Image 1 (tube, rainbow, N blue to C red):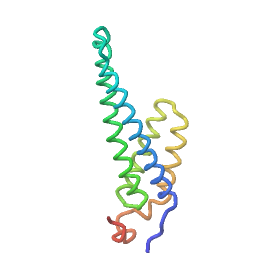
Image 2: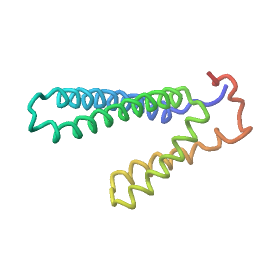
Image 3: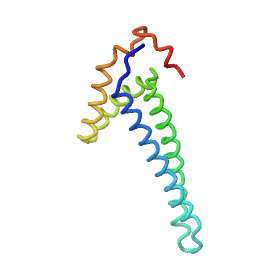
Image 4: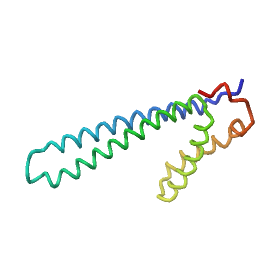
Length: 136
């Protein structure tokens, strides 16, 4: 049986929690957008309608991203190989973007995730282990 990685399980749980937060935020944006859309004041309609539509769109996008985060977090928790590689690549991209905008916390957190993924990479290389029991 292949070695299990506690760090991947923690990252998976954090991904699931982040996805739940995105879903809650998306539902909140959609609710506020719907509330703004129901304003009956004729003078405010040209101002509030674009804001309401924008908030509803942001809510739907947040909802979709939240669902994807939950799915990837669950697969990372189960240590599925593609979820590991996706996390590794996205953490490196995140470090680069954080450097560009000078977000040092993003550099630190993304860097730690990338370093951890680099350290356990041998378990996820092609043919390194038999991962067939983890495919679900």
